Image (cartoon, rainbow, N blue to C red; front, side, top):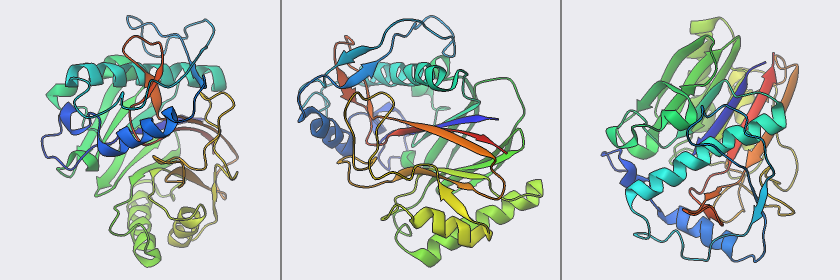
Length: 310
């Protein structure tokens, strides 16, 4: 019953693929300022131990903290080294949230819009897990980095513009960043998933079980319908509620997973014909400030953990 985690950061289209391409990008700044506009403590920050393995459970209470003031994530406010440190702390903390929810570490941890094989991101695997695969089409925003966190069999099935597919245990999972150029076009999105499923079926003899990531969809049911049509099976949303209540948020809900909480871009859909049991949590875009006294949005994407039994 593998556990998957996907967290996209917010990167630009630079071919350098270094930290600067992801440091305080426009939508990250917008996300932080949006969250900071609501006063009061809201984020449940968990204790972490930077010298321990990232999957080691750290016991201790969560601290309820407010957002840092608006403008905290402004461009130029943090050096690339400081921003990298905040990203590392957020990735490490996500393991603690998964331990508390699922009682286990995730199996495959994928970060979108990041190429962890780039020298400037050296050491990130100390906070996430063993770097298994880093794929890119050239631009930072079109990159994926997959970390095999627990021992097991991880098979890279293929990748292309806006997607990377893996098999973990017997589950075929596809992580996506659907290109904006096709994201609102039903026929194009169906063709996108149909070609991926054909490759997955060719490699494994089975269809896609799970799709998760940044879908850029314009309506909550769009991805499930498109993947279902492409595969020829019924796909369902893991999250069927109107609002999102992140696991690391206290008494704060959002209308979506994007920068202003209006769209369900970051989502997951599963094959109802093959999945026996599905559970999930969302995590907010916020992480630690430098002194851990407040919350700061480090991306415009919510994180999503999905556990699926086939």
